[in-house]
Image (cartoon, rainbow, N blue to C red; front, side):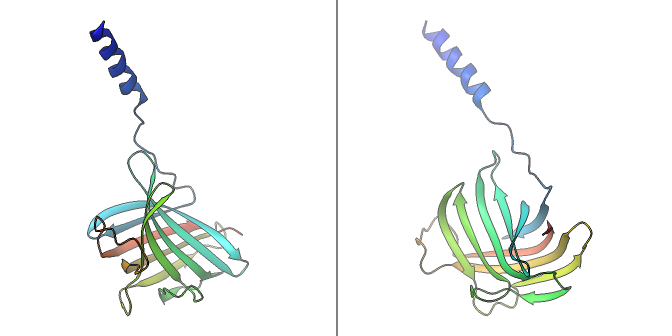
Length: 170
């Protein structure tokens, strides 16, 4: 009887395991290095107003739970090709932050490293027909002084060699 129960438990566990998450890139995609590790994220965007756009790069674990959120707000719309400094001032254009999360639980927040010349967003193309914004991004983040100070997470996170395409139809 004990063997049958263990066998049933094993079969239940085997069939209840989730498959590897398949990213949905229909609204956009980001490829980027985080501390030298190649990463991929869903890129989604939304309008704050008719003249301002925001975007989120959503990193997920192997079963699809949200693990990181790279956010950029106040992107002038329609965007103009060029390089723009990222900001940690919530009232300025290209305001950004990064958060480590476990799906819907906030674990750690990061703000831009002060005076980092490497924190730049470059808009390289805007296709007004299909609404896609393309560009490059690099950013250096430090733990927010108001965050939990969890030693499990690094004090600094460097995003480099980022490329993105985001749908932006109003």
